[in-house]
Amino acid sequence: MAVIANGDRKLTWWQLALITFVFTSAGPFGMESSVNAAGPRNTILLIFAVPLFHVLPMVLIVTEMSSWMPTNHGSVLWIARAYGPVVGFISAIMQMFISMVDISVYPVLLVNYLSSAFFPDIEPLPRYLLELFFIAVGSIPAFLHVGDMGRVSGVVLALICLPFVVSIAYLLPQCDPAKWWVTKSDVDVATSWSTGIWMYTGFMALGALGAEVKHHSVFLMGCGAAALLDIIMYLLPLLVALQVPGEWGDGFLVHAFGTLMPGMTYAISIAGALSGFGLYTTSMTCFSRSVWGIADRGWLPRIFTRTSPSTGAPYAACILLLLTSSVLGLFDFDFLVALLLVISSCNFALFYTAFLLLRYREPYAYRPFRIPGGKVGAWLLVSPIIVVYFTLFVATVVENFLIDLLLLLMVAVLVALYIFVVRPAHAASPGAGEFHVHDVEEPEWHQKRRLEAQRALGIDDITPMDDCVTFSSFPPAETPQASHPDNDGSTCSVGGGGVSSTEETVLVHHEALEELPSD
Image (cartoon, rainbow, N blue to C red):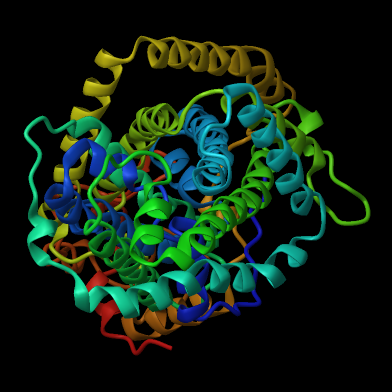
């Protein structure tokens, strides 16, 4: 199956920053659970800790991997390359489950904020019917042309941020800093960290934009700016809201800002609703296309590849997500976030270990951006967050029997899909669902850099985006292998096969590539 990358590279770093900010935050809403579970001081620390231990490693890894394989298939391609098509299939389906749970959080969040100001005593049934209404309305843009959603996202974001900008500018100078450092004796670590990670969720999905950026620096600058905006958007409203005593339940920000500035009650409530609505519509638009892509690879029934002839929208995938979010909307916010963390932990484990495995198996692959420090640096980068995810996974699974049942159901769905969909598709068409870097249409910028590397190294011919360079210009003794930062005597692997110096193979020296001027 060919993976086509877009050669028209238009995303600048600030455009990527805006997209990322909307996709990962879109306002401070939802952090009430973390304050309720951990207290003010720990939540403030968490706002900084999650970007350091979770966002930073993820952004660096996404940048390195997408600079190596600049396609729009993201982490599914990287995991499939490291572990093979079966594990790639498992990762893709887990990402679909993550999408289903994540998209279900936003209608719940939306109703939480509307009800906190307009109908605080709403009963469960009317509340659920209201969620269904917003699920149906919020799904409409996903059935239209994707450009229709992009034209309104900036306006929605401005409407979300405006009441906070006005309120914070007036209230922050009057705050008492002593209220920021109040501690809580019975800290719920699992809930607070689950919510904290959810607050910054979405950075791994940016690997799907690998073919849309001009240079790896766009990822670093764009994601870095978005992470900074996320921190500011969570921190400043929190510092103001902590001035108001009370129990930090769903929609507490409306109560807090309404108490400090009575005229802001409805403005903050509407902003929270707009945030939930905007996140739902953008997520539905993005995730439905992800489901379509999984089905197009033969990993889901072909019915989910159906698209609208007029708009190109994957309507079958949209209907699937609409139905699942309608069912999951029966659960509350804290449960959905905990479930999301458990599923995400499994997929994140594949993501991080795939990065480490490819560093060992293919150390000489052409990576225009490379995380410094070699293998030691790679281990130091990912080890802390792997420990955090494992701890939270165990704590959440042990404490919640319903999550255990849902995990077993997901495993059953995985097994059924593999037996009844993937295996027959692979038997009918060998290689279905597999990814190869060599199938990618190499972007012009990547080809330019690669050809410059060839000339600098005196190499006449390299297969586009290949991992190893085979030629016989030098004897084996002159192979520049020893000084590579990741060198441990291992050989480069292409399609599972090793390349040895006895074949008079010269491996590309990564430092030589780094010395080339960037675009």
